[in-house]
Length: 297
Image 1 (cartoon, rainbow, N blue to C red):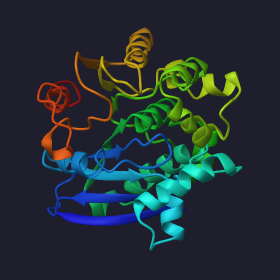
Image 2: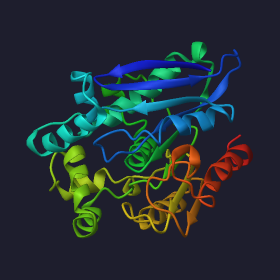
Image 3: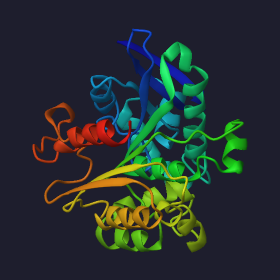
């Protein structure tokens, strides 16, 4: 395995896990969650390695967050120290690096970086997929709907959009709107900071929230989508994925979804590998590989 880090901008970067042979392979961009406050570790490298073992060139996308910025500015700090300071600053700062549309622009730039270096990375440019978890699922879904928007291409320095081969949304936030904000206030008030981190306010305009809720912007250019979620998810209600699947169906976007009765949030691979062992839920990865084999040729 060749492991290499590629800088994107600010504190955003890609970590590549590449096969050494010169065979052109499909690629996957793994987008961890972290409430737009940080980039979760158990949804990054272990997932990339699982795809690597299934023949993919794998990339973990680390987008800019207040925590990653602090780690870059203070390399002697521990991760916990950066998180604690980030928690304090999130309410005191007028701007943090995860504010929209920064992370989306960084993702578009990451896709461009892979296509620009496809020969040396041995990547099939027609088969670059994305997978996002939780807030990363939100980012993946937004990009999946807007990958060819002119304003995004301009900000990312792209001459044309790069459509994902397919996208995987794992317990993703597809309604980043007023309803979810009210649900958080009632059930998970500690997560309201996610709205501040992304929208730069805990009371964003309804129009902006609706626009950045990917369930509202699914269109004919949205890539084929694989979804999974658990009914017991305590941070992102399963209804978000159910509504998203319904909209994909209405817009005639190919999709497949798997919903599990048990299992908490942030399960990642749901295996010992990620410290979240749920033997039934971990079947999602094999089901995804079958879906890719039979329907995404």
